Length: 441
Image (cartoon, rainbow, N blue to C red; front, side):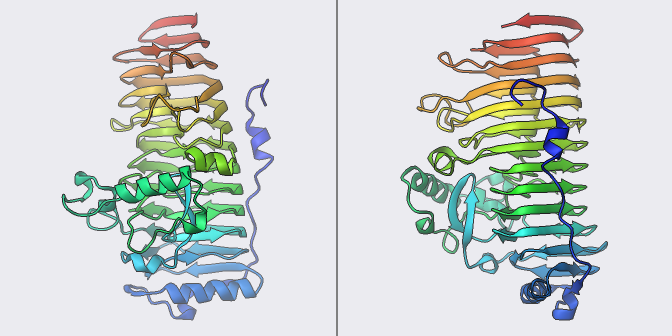
């Protein structure tokens, strides 16, 4: 794809949702009770085991409110939430033990299990019209992030020490099995995480009150996410984080989040370079982004590289939505970001920039791994209100380049275009506040 426009058809050739046998296993037949108080983890596990032993099918969550701890999917199992079903997750961290092999912010470790988890499985799904309720809030999970506005109180623990410790372990190549967190530590688990899985489907349900990232496929192949409604405004509440995946479709989804709506990632710093698997062949289309730090973000954990990511026909607007397309990296992340398409996107209002490329995210300059950004194509984007139409900030010794913006119209942009250490950025038929710009810098 290096020399031609990024094609949705080329990405879609790689993606086919799994199909499941028509067998059904209702969790109520295994002892689950819809009172929202009795822990149903064992009943759900038994239903999954029976489904697996029968050769696959659907484990059904019927109408009602069911309480559960960690749910671990097996191959050929579809966890199906009927209309009117709510699967609520325990607020007791012990219900997410024993620890599992996972990633926290792009670094591999042993930590609390994600609420719904699968490791090295094939043909798995979460589907249906029901609700996944993480039950996170100002009193549970969110305070661990250490932010007073989200429930943390001075003098109580927060994740900073554990987060720094894990980053140091990654930088020192400590074996993953010795990066032990979980009980006695406070790194929040992600909500839904298939890890090293193939043929994955998420379809139709609603997600609320997540402790951390919401849907986070890691090192997966052939993932479909469609018709999901995500509404969760806690710390690091990214809606979807494809991480070191190959082949993912995100379509007809609605995002209102406490962080990025979608953030494409590929591992952090030395640990990301150790794993060294890019995220590639991701198609984002026909989605609505209502709130978040970025509508579609690339990064910041991009050390394994990100390429061939296409966003098209999406709508984004909210006074609190900070950016539409956000590429964020630094000289400690490094990595190559290339072949990114952002086309036919309608932006009502964003708080900051419609298009942003920033090399100064978090640690910024001074590291040995200078980021590379190239072949970024932004076309047919309109916006009605923003601080910046385009914001790009590179390094003096490594300016931002390889970006083409064409046939775009940015109205009511308070500060227009900000370029700092930028070379090789092409603007073609770009209108900012009524003025047509044609230039190459």
